[in-house]
Length: 170
Image 1 (cartoon, one colour):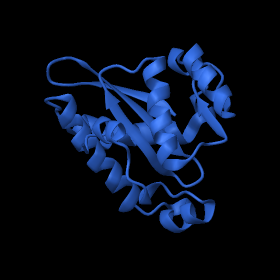
Image 2: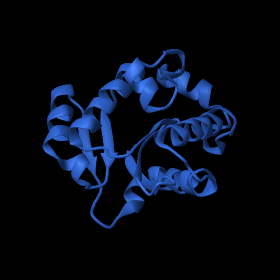
Image 3: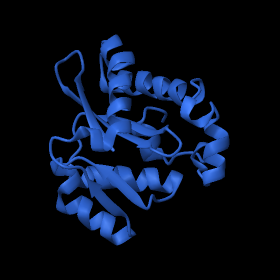
Image 4: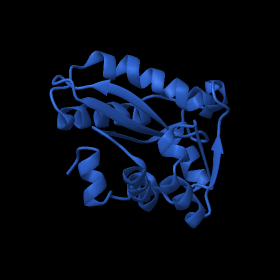
């Protein structure tokens, strides 16, 4: 899990929470907002976990949202181990860093977002294409089959209204 930053046309910040599954190479969620603090982060994670189930481990950098009280309390309450990479060692979270580069190069740098809602629509379409139309070489090109073997059922569950709004499908 990591954040990717950009701006919309008005100059307001665009902060995208990117969550990927290292096992299936699936983009679990990319949630753009203007701001995401600790309490907002755990609400978003509750929504994602309601769709996908809880992970046993989450790997992040040492950003304040990931090391703050809200996240630590949330992870402890749900029995989720947090694995923080060493400062200055993004290679310890290589898959999300690679994903972030693709998101930036192929989506964020290619669009001029006129609003937060516009960013949500475009990013949602890019994530759908990333997950459903690109074969993942490391998995023999079969994300759905591999995810099914691991028990990942996120594609068949409809998101709640608040998460649907956050990702622009409300």
